[in-house]
Amino acid sequence: MRCLTKISGPFFYFIFSPLSVSADNSQWVEWIIEGQAAYSHADNLSYSAFSNDSEDDSKLTIDALLGRFYQISGNSRMHITVDVGKAQYSKFDLLDETRLGASIGFRHKFGLGHYIPYIQMNASYHHNEMDSDRWSHDLSNIDVEIGKHISQSFSMATGIGYNIMNGQSWTVVVPELSNQVFDQEYWHAFILADYIITQDWLLSFSYSYRSGDFHSACTVENVAKVLATNKVKAITLDDVFGGCIYQTEGHHHLYSGSVSYALTQRSAFNFIAQYSAGNAAELDYRSSEVQFNYNYRF
Amino acid sequence: MKLSCLKILMLAIWLLTFSLQTFANRLNITVIDENNKPIENAVVYINESLAESIEKVVVIDQVDKEFIPYVTAIRRGSAINFPNNDEIRHQVYSFSNSKNFELPLYKGNEFRPVIFEKSGEVPLACNIHDWMKAYIYVVDTDKFDLTNSEGKGELVNLKAGQYEVLVWHPEQGADVSESLQTVTLGNSPQQLKFTLAQTPKFKAWRAPKGFKRRGY
Image (cartoon, rainbow over all chains, first blue to last red; front, top):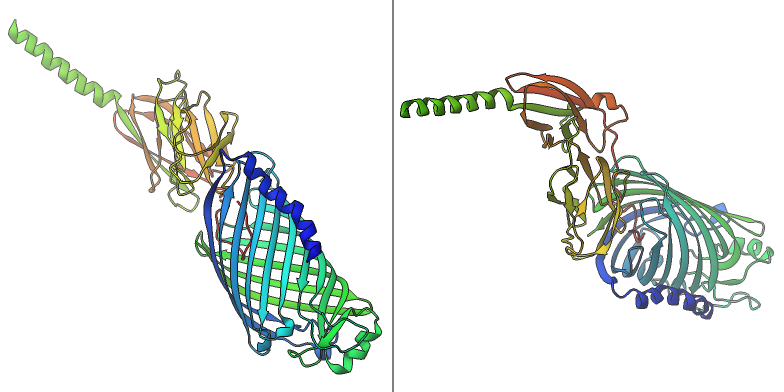
């Protein structure tokens, strides 16, 4: 958390400093009110490295978000939002969660015109309260994105982000190892592209590279193999999948594709497919997820 | 003497009526796409080059984060006023060769009307709200019209003779030959039909593809 404070200080200064110099034109503008209902299914919810440990499940989620844009100048604006969400799993109901969070962002366009690139910085904080206390955690994120419209129907963006997760201390399993599995730090870099096929249909692709801490669950019979990698940073007993949950360090490639169909200017049905391939020490981690959601923006 | 004056007056009225019938004719124009659907907001006009018009001010409003109307046709030399009737500020600009201008972030009616001295297409946009788009088409004639939702427009007060009639629409295809027709106008109203290929222009204002992504 201290690390986040250290890096977020200059970030927030950068966000707020334009407010004081552009007071003439600055004003609060559009409200942001959004709602989303989603159904998703993951084939390796436990993110296990072992096929005999993999658990699949589906969940229903609803989210609501309230915020507002602040127009700083003709080229710059910021936003502040708060959001709340609820997720309910079909089988692993200890993972049912309530999320509460807030975000702030600053966006600057480098000039006048549709094809002018922009830079956007976001910071967010979320508390994820799960039915399993040991899985509950706080997640803080900072990311920077640059992007532009390449053509009337094609736009691209790329960026990097830094994430810090803080969780609970739980049962000590291996005395030499930490039991704070959900105290994690990782960074990610991403590239994404949007292609408007028609006014109603939008295709999106993204690739994200993630490096740093992550957690995975395994049953008792596979714990020895996990510990043998000598890369486990923290481990504790898991009440969700029944074995252990551990933290290790590695890298992941995350591929995502989505198709969005706009029902109106304000609502859309979206289908999203994601595939994650990760590696830590000698172990490979794979998972995929599909999601259908309905999104409404007031 | 009195009778003769009356005769002259009657003759004058008859001549005026006759001349209006002969010289002030009308061209009814229909613009459709390749699927026989009417094209709204097409500018139909006579190909001629008149001197700049006397000052005329037209309004393009900004309401609910849209330009109203979407297409405006004006005669060269006319001015356009761009009031912003939203509660939020907009930044109107165009990079057109016909008129390159910018109205920095504003609300209400802060700026003087903008005068359009060159003919041609002037696409408008807002730098804050990417989906806000509109078009001005500046013509060299006073004989022009915009098609309605049925794709119909009319050019009135035309004398008998031969005319080149042109049509322009923001989404028309690259083939300009289909936007020009020559017509010989006689003593009765005439019909003209244009079929334009369309290249759809996308507006960025669409429903969100996912939760929490913020943009302009």
